[in-house]
Length: 323
View 1 (tube, rainbow, N blue to C red):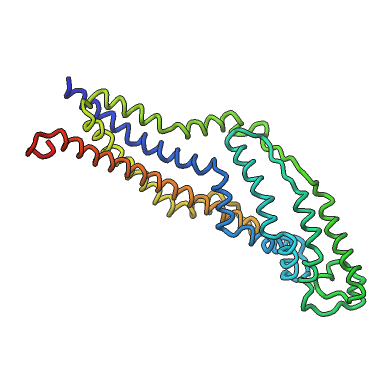
View 2: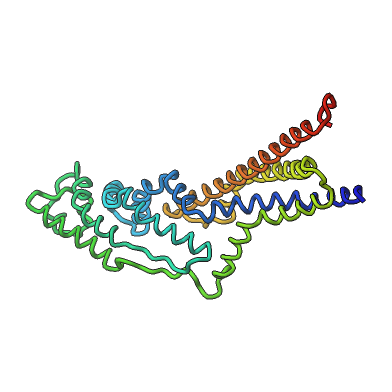
């Protein structure tokens, strides 16, 4: 009967190995995907806040076929949209998006008032910096469109006039932008409605319970001592750890190409290219988390083997070694 139990335990352990590997990957993924700090760190590490004003200038210039010098527009946007302001505006939105993915929210509220106030306050310094070193405006340029502000430096007597025109231009942009905007994220007919997103997260969070249940069955069939129970845990878990680590290493190598070829849209827009870079960085981060999950399983398995050796040595008769 004991032999039959060990045979059954060996067969069931073949189920335990892939189940433990999948559970480790699922748990690692949910730890990262449902944590706002994952995305906040990506934006900081990828210098997205520093790069955004310049990329926005490039995008606007391409979209409008603007004749204004790109460097001037870039300087203005960098001054009116500083790093701290962009980060303070973006991070609350990230937290709301993660809440939505968790299945705990259905809308996104953007507070744009601080951004608009700061942009208006920073405009004079931005315009002064952008015009520094430019040639003085001619009379025709003074009287032409506001875009001429980006090509020349206003005469001292007409600086206030030019600044007012710049404010009018900015106010015209902000006129279509409310101080606060609520964006519904839950749409009828979504592939993953709220309840399903919530269930997916719960399943990933508690995924380790599945291999644990299988392991307890294995112990019930074959383990009669603590050392035997640890051996039945250590060896299959070490195999699962190797599988998880291998998947993580392969994913980190192949993920950028897969994301680039199958997920990212084909676009030359600078902002879309930045988004693509961030998605690729996210894929790498998730792969790294998988590698760490595999390493964690390996450490647990090795620790179990060491404890097994200690228990068997303590239980062995003097002078008989471990057994």
